[in-house]
Image 1 (cartoon, rainbow, N blue to C red):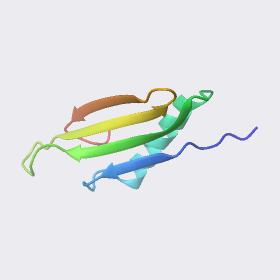
Image 2: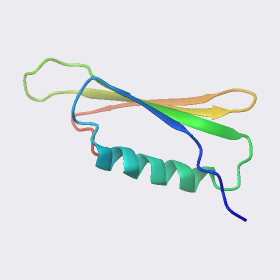
Image 3: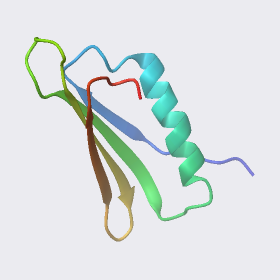
Length: 82
């Protein structure tokens, strides 16, 4: 039985969210979603929360579209690549 890939939306105004990181997130999300019929997709938003000075700070917000209520998580770090 073939599994359907759940849709994922990406939002970022910073170039640090590369195609490689999007693929890494998609793989981890689809692995987590395996066997869960109540998940319908996800959203990953990355925002730079400090100026151009070092160290920069980023906030990532992940929303898993889940029936009946969505699940959200927010984290901050000096890098997007974790």
